[in-house]
Amino acid sequence: MKVVVDMNKCQDHGQCVFSAPDVFQLDDTGRLAYVSEPDDALRDEVEEAADVCPLQAIRIEA
Amino acid sequence: MTATPHDSPGPGRVVVAGASMGGLRAAEQLRAAGWTGAITVVGDEPHMPYNRPPLSKDVLAGAAPFESLAFTPRASTADVEWRLGTSVTAARLAERVVVLDDGTELPFDGLVVATGMRPRRLRCAGPAGPGSGRHTVRTLADAQALRDELTRPGVRVVVVGAGFIGCEVAATAKGLGVADITVVDPEPLPMLRPLGELLARSLHRRHEERGVRFALGVGVARFEGEDRVTGVVLSDGSVLPADVVVESVGSIANTEWLDGNGLDLTDGVLTDEHLRVGGHLHVVAVGDVARFPNARYDGVPRRVEHWSIPTDTAKHAAKTLVAHLAGTQAKAEPFAPLPTFWSDQHEFRLQSFGAPALGTADVRVLDGDPEGDVLVGYHADDRLVGVVALGGRAATTGAARYRAQLLAQPALTS
Image (cartoon, rainbow over all chains, first blue to last red; front, side):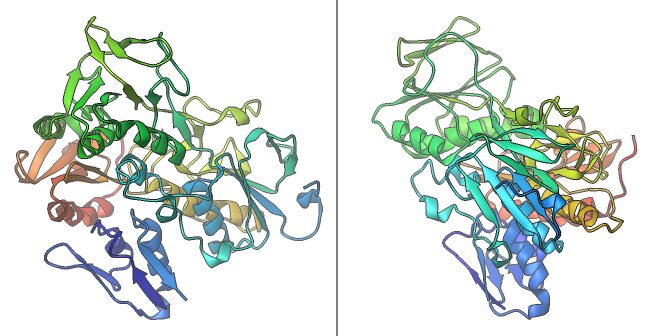
């Protein structure tokens, strides 16, 4: 599974971190860091993370 | 469109009334819950579902084109039928039929009520209608029309209603360079009811420091002007000169189409703890039109206009409906979402988890200082029921630390 976050849209709300903590994290300065090719077993939580992003900045590509 | 799916073999059809975020999430979650039958989504706006929070911020500021707002549909919804620019005007629930504004009768096996809200309008004397200078902010068309007027040089703006939308619009207008802007509200402080006095006072100060004026503790008596507004007459007799008025005075549920079905429609659509409507097993409601009991709190049915609610309700309601349509027993826990909302105003952000409005009588500073970055706890019966952070973006992530605590708490019993 390939995950792309539009960092021009991302405003560091961090809602994705609650849904998929294995894929998304906020670093010490509050900026988003993420795994761009997570295991397919994490699809449900990544889809949830994409749903709850206030800026709708998360895309799942295949 | 004349087929009667519930009399024909196969899984049949679910109609989703409303094509905003709640309607989209309902369609996605019906598929996720295993529904393989037809899905028809009916909505009155001409657009595919789009994200509304930027309307009062980035769209108004001219920083976000429509393409950036549209939700990216999931592959699982590729075969969903979208009937856009179309309203549902009536429903006969027992008969399993909805009526569209072109007279089409659309039969269904399951129905999702997702028709949302529309802005409440001020009903007082003065100019009204298109071209009058009076605006609301609910749709893309609303935001674009308001932006066209806010960017006129020297424009004088009055915002009626100091809730979230009103305060966001005021902040965005300031950012656009509007010099003359006043927010009017009958309450003594902005956002007082949802946030309580401590944060309301802090927000009031932050807005005033950035040049937003307030007329608080007063209402609107009437508008001055012939075809266009030239001023707003307040209940104390004072007059605010105005070229543009933004009305952000709450919203009204779009439920008229459900009249005649014996439902409780006093404030949205009353649902049970699984989001079913009026005892009908084949009808559920999602989004801010649903007035549902939250098992996490006191069980009192409430409508919730937070952005997270369409997604949360769609997940639960789709499972409820698909289990019924499939003839399997739904053994789900009662619906118990943890509410969350945010608001961006000027360069600061509010981030909330839980239900602060239930705990405004017992507000404690958990961290920081209301003059700067602050984290506030809301309590009921000495128990934390909500946290709100206010400040710079990094500071507001502090509220997240309390989210797990709020999630772990047992239900409030009252």
